[in-house]
Image (cartoon, rainbow, N blue to C red):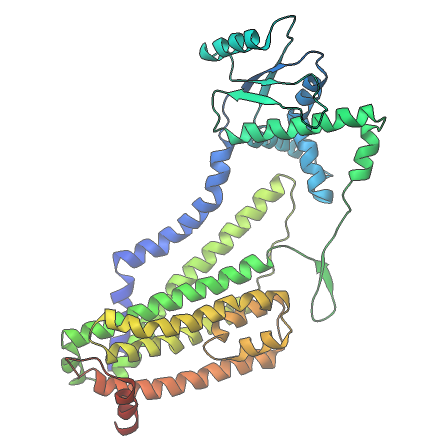
Length: 451
């Protein structure tokens, strides 16, 4: 046992104290936070108001466009799109929404230009000169027959890449033309709003006990994200195990190690040590992700957008780490076996592709599991070893299956691990002392039967 623990300690600190581990472990949460907040930060940088001249004869479209581009109108659109969630805002939250609308939708200073007997060419020359003098940013030409099907609206801008301003003006213009057409058809704007009012669509979730609770849209994203984390971590640390085995074989350190410890102790010590380093990293990532989700929910609530936090219980976290351990030992044992068969990591990559395919099958099985966690496919996928370490946590998160299915899945994985460890230890004993050529599958099978 002392030698086994010594191997575990060596393998653990060999991984944990590397620069790559420290950087990826502690910078990954920072990267997640940056990816989440960077778009908001970039879009929230408020520039100067866009100065737009609107060339129109009577000013009907100009007035409607100016109203549609106001922050108050943007807030009104946002409230309509979010149904009941932002209808009861206090004064502070309503003001924040106005500021957000102005930042994300852009702010505008519109100026009406009447042709007043001038030709289109003369007006354009004057406006182009104003743009050159930086007295204007853009101008819009509204045709006299603006409600005709083939009417052409021309927008000239100093910065044609400002897609936010272009989109806001185009949407505001479309709304203005539609309302003007409705007015000509004697249809009131209030009646149109009443007709276009969205239904109050409320989603409720029913758990296995029959209790009803508010539904949320976190389900698929978190379930797939957890499965993807398991997929990446198992693949990464499996490769670490294989690389360490190949390194010991290439440098002939294995011969020295075998003289002081049994091959089984060496292999299991390596697996347990690397597994603990993987657990350390996954634990940091998991709790960092929970902290980021909590922060996002709080920020949404401060803007008057209540979001129910996903139900992640301590029991689910326990299940998540248990299935991580199962998946790690299943695949790392295979990686260790592959490492003992080959002479270089490049040769090992030829065999690793098959394990990656099985892992990807578990990852993509999350999609049908989220859609129907009680289907026959979900049951089979969550009970099958090699697939269930990725698929079962997703199923538990969406709708926890009966306890006997969870225990059965863990039990089947434990049996598969025991069988793999037994076979890998016998092959490991012979393979680590073979040099010069890559072992074939029949040779490995002979090692398992005879050693």
